[in-house]
Image (cartoon, rainbow, N blue to C red; front, side):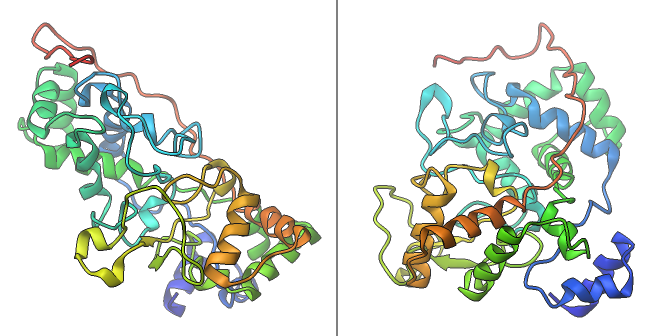
Length: 331
């Protein structure tokens, strides 16, 4: 992180110079509250995020796989899509996703706006088309009015839909974690065991990939650096986008923010617990076998990264009309 960004973040949080210096040298930075958001667009995006009518079945919404009551994920190995189809990969958390260098495990979407359009048209997820999704919205007067208020036009298109969803997702940050309180100068915010876990996390090399405010999400790394990772999952990571063999099994490093809530772990969801995940990552990525005590210390530290979860009223979705296309959940 550049020093200018550090000072900027500190200023937003209202920190003293001493507090700024206390964490500026650390590889992990506090999560900042969202600073700029279009409230009207975000409110529209919240409705769209929760609206299952953007799916062919009328049953699946963004929140189905990125459940904001469950750490922004679904706690399944792979998500359940249209007609109970098995998803190809573990659903990453939507929380703090605005801090990612790119979206999806393979980085195929540059930003939240681009990502938001993917699941709607994916036959294994929401199984709709962008045209049909827009037709549904156009048939609902409540949405027509709200799109007009937000975008200043009677036209509704998929670009507006994904922009609104992304604007809402930008608000889903989780400041206030106990570890952030410690970074900001509260020495009593974490325990001795948790502090020992953080020191192990740093000194063992975990911070080479898991750093910054998101504690990850800023790079692509090979899964199985020291020892090959054995999996039945067909996903090849970045290689699926670049076509380069050197990118095989390179995935976007996941954020560790709220990690105690986002089980199971890894792109294939094969690690059910943090204890298991820490053991595997130690051996495969670092060439180190953590003792039971060391593992427990690191797990204790990771649990201090749980921040304040997004808190808001569930949206009341505008009702369909006689002209609204009927969902086809069993086709």
